[in-house]
Amino acid sequence: MAEGPGREIVKLDLGGGAGYDVIVQPGGVSRLADVVQEEAPASDYAIIADATVADLYGPTVRRQLQRHDLRAQLFTFPAGEANKTRGTWSALTDDLLAAGIGRDACVIALGGGVTGDVAGFVAATYMRGVPVVQVPTSLLAMIDAAIGGKTGVDVPAGKNLVGAFHQPRVVVVDPELLHTLPPAELRSGCAEAIKHGAIADARYLAWLQAHAGGILAGELPALHELVVGSVRIKVRFVTHDERESGARKALNFGHTLGHALETTLGYAIPHGRAVAAGMVLESELGERLGVTAPGTAQRVAAAVRTFGLPTDPPRDVDAEAVLSATRLDKKALARQPHYTLLAEPGVVARDGEGRWTHAVDDALVRAVLGADSAA
Image (cartoon, rainbow, N blue to C red; front, side):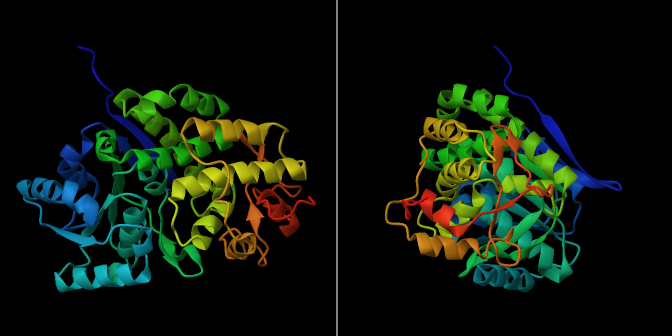
C-alpha cells in the first residue's frame, strides 16, 4: 500500500532567533500534546473554539492533553463571522479569569479563521499577553489566517480594525481535519490559495486549476500539496515583513474590495467568496490603470471559476457603500484607499515609488463595480 503524505515542517524565521514552525502533518492533532509540551510549555491550556468545532474536536483535544497530565479547559463562543466581536473577546477573557487561568498559561486556538483571530487576540491581551498555539481546522485558516500573527475582531466600521500582532509559538496543521469541512467552506478557502498563486507563483496557480477536482473531492494528497504550497508562500512574505509595512501587503490582493463587500453586505457572504470577486475586480482595476498586463483579469477569473467561486459582486451591492468601506481599510493612507495590484499572474506590481500598493480613483472603482458606465 502506498504511503500517504508525510510530515512537513515550514520554518518561519523572524530574525534574532525568533520564529516558529508550521507543522503540516495528516493526523497531527493526535500528536498535539507532544508538540505543545515542547513548543509551548504551560501550567494550563485554555482551548478556545467556536461551538461547532468544539462539538467536533474540543473534548478529544482536551482529553488528549489531560492524558499527558496537562491541565486543559475548553472555552467556547457562538460560531460565525458575526461573533468575531469585542463582545466575544470580552466574554472569553472573563471566562478565563473566572476559571483561574494565569499568566503562565497558553491559549490553543482550535478552529477556523474567526477562532484564530479571536483566540489570538485574547492571548495577545490576556494578562498583557500569553502564548498561543494555532490549530486551524478550515482550509482558509490552515493556509492563511493561522500564520503570521494577525489577531483581532471586527467592528461596525469594518473587518479586523481592532487587533494586535501576536505570533504563535507553533502552528499545527492537520489536513485530515478538512474531511469534516462543508464543501462550501472548502471552496471558500481555495480563494486564498488562488491568491497565493496570483501574487507569487503562476505555476502554482496553474497547478491549482489542474488539480481542482481532487482538491474539491477532498483527496488527501491534493489537499496536502495545496496546504504545503500555500504555507510556503505565506511564510515567505511574513518572514520578509512581519508587521505588514511593505512586501506583506501583497497578501491583501483581492481583500480591499473583498473586505468592503463583506462589511457592506453585513457578512452575509463568506470571506472566500468575497475575496474571489475582489481579486477579479482588482485585476480589472490594474488593467484599466495600465499596471496589469492585459488578460490577467481573465486568467484570475478562470481560476476562480474552476473552484466554483464568484467573479462578480452580488447584483444589488451598493457601490457607494463599498467605496465608503474601502476608506477604512488598513492599507488606506491619508484616508485614500490603496490596492494591491498585479503586474501579471504570479507578480505583484509596485507603484512609481516602489510601494506595494496603489492609489486608485473612486471613479475607476465605481466602473469595475458596474456603477459607472463612463470609465
